[in-house]
Length: 241
Image (tube, rainbow, N blue to C red; front, side, top):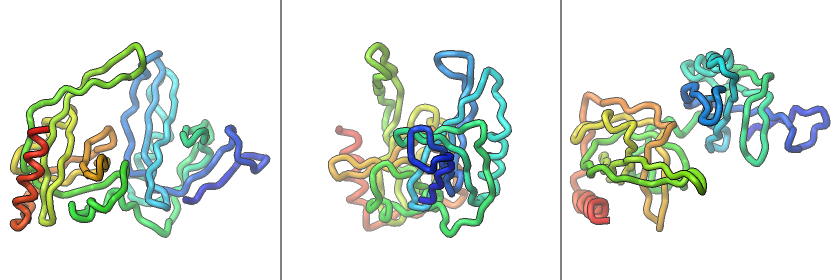
């Protein structure tokens, strides 16, 4: 990862400013804070070692930002960039008033937005982001999941477990309610920035707030014929667990 220290003492402290060479692969919408009238947004960078980094920009009560527009330009262009003057503390990154996006030719491309088949994904690591093109083979009923935001507050969210398949295999994928209307059984989709989950040596995928694109594909994906037993096994696990 290209990381440049820009503080005057050239020492890595909690107040150090860093610059990252990266591709902007996703930008979340500007949203109002839960606890006050100010706003914020976050964006995802893919850096040289192919890991992804979330960066947060805090705003005032006015939901506008010149940097936000510049980030969108860089995302649309697909070019690499140096993102300057970021505050790093405990592996968390935030923008400062001096943060800029400077176009730069980089010697790598972001793997997380490159389409990979299911067989290749089975060799990936936990929490990585990935992009697939696959057919929706099965969809479960709605499942309520309770999350503890803190010791005083619980939040219930709804998901569906689905099976996606391509010419190399099948995987289970969790889809959260904000994406329910974007998928239909039997159709094929290009799905950008899913998160890989590995539990008990079993890999699955899940949509997240970074899953920015679920686009229908006109020509359906062919499902591998010699893998039907694998599909049935995955289905049995999904609907009986």
